[in-house]
Image (tube, rainbow, N blue to C red):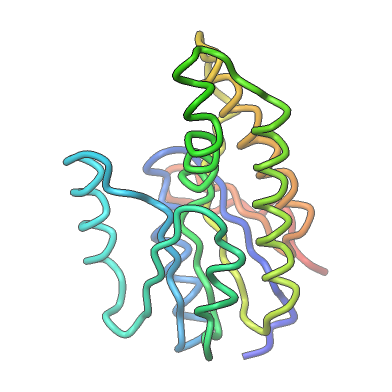
Length: 191
């Protein structure tokens, strides 16, 4: 289905209805959906959340679990998908930061420039994938810049770099929505 759109970005806070809205859009935009899950079951609570998300998706959707290098992984697995949902950019950036910064985090040192370069590279890889495939992409991400400033360095770096990633994707996106209490607000719509 050609809608003239390549990328839809859905932002919002925790439990704002982002994933549900993304799934509704995907069902309207195509029958062959590739769901890209970036979350990793690192503890019981996260494992439970992942299982809950899996149950909410249609059975005929394919799932790709990809914690990093998402653009490359999608390119390898896209096959005939008409719609790709990435849920979510928030966890993807967390995976990038904890993977890149693990050694320096253990030494209580953070190389912000290196982490920033890795985040930009991840988004550039995703953007290349979006531009080089025929599928419509729906990307879900949290808006974390509206709350308190974290009191620790990694929290501030994460907030800043997720904000940067959101901005880069918003520039690429044809449509951008902000979810508030389950209601989508159109921020940017392709004319």
